[in-house]
Length: 212
Ligand code: GRF
Image (cartoon, rainbow, N blue to C red; front, side, top):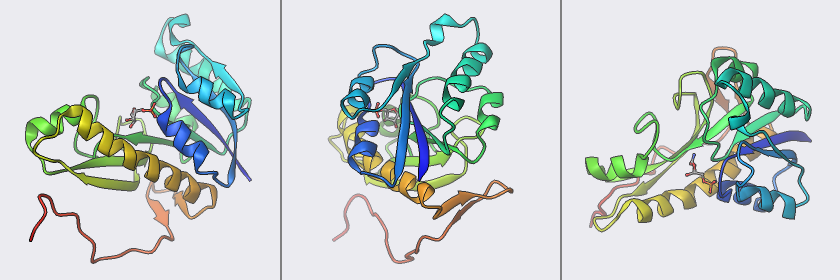
C-alpha cells in the first residue's frame, strides 16, 4: 500500500474529504507550517501523526523548505499531497519530489493562477469556473493537470457562494486523483506528461447559463 503525507496550513476541509474517502493508501503524517491549523485536530481525531514546521522559525524559504523536506522524508512517502498548504515552495524542494507532489488549486488552470481566484472569476464575468488537481512543478500553478471539475457561475454569486460550489468539487476530485495515483492508474512520465488509463467521454459538456 502506498504511503502519503499531507501538508496543510488551515481548516483542512480537503484533508477531511481525503480521510472520509477511505482511500487505498496509508496516511503516514499530516504536516503544517502553522501550529494553529484547524486541520491538525482532524488528523489527530483519525489517529494520524501530526507535525508542525513553523515557517517563521527559519530565516528564508530555502532553510524552511530543507527542514520541511527532512521531516517529510522521515516518513518516506510515495505521494506528497498539498491540501491548502499556503507557502510557495522552492524549485529545489519541488524537484526533490518530481512525480510525487500534487496540489489542488481553486480555478480551472491555467486560468487564475495565484490568489483570489473566485473574486477574479466574478470580476471577469466568466460563466464557468472550477478547480484543478495537478502535479507540482517549479512554475507556480502550472504543473501537468490530473483532473479538473467545472461549475457554473450564477448571476447572484459572490466570492463566498462561488467558493463553496467549487470547494464541493475540490473534495470530490482530490480524493479521486489520490485514488488513481495510489493505484497507479495515473502517473507522470519522464517527459512530464500525465499518463492515465481512465475512460474518456466525448459527449459531455457543462453549458452555463443553462440552455432550453
Ligand atoms: C482550497 O480552496 C484549496 O483549493 C486552496 O486552499 C483551500 C484550502 O481549503 N489551495 P481547506 O484547508 O482544504 O479547507
